[in-house]
Image 1: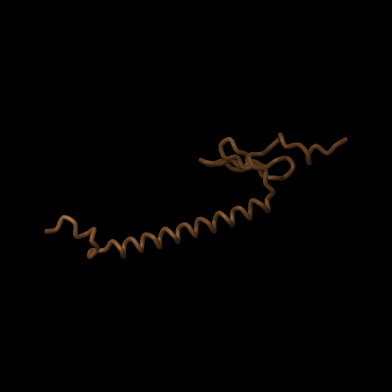
Image 2: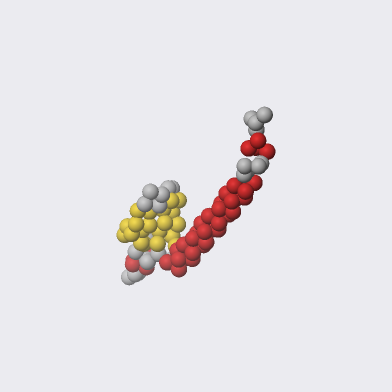
Length: 88
């Protein structure tokens, strides 16, 4: 008789549910990430790597946005042509 615990992907246990995603654990031990209509079955190692990559991407995004905001602040200071509009 086949070992259904290794092949049964129908039975899952809900691990977490948020505003944008749901994570279930499959009976085979993999994690199922549900994003709307999209479901990904991932090993825990892949999820850890994905978390690191997404964390790095968010940190890089924040750094870039901070750099842009600083450049806009310096470039759009009191002496810029945009600040002189409306002055006689």
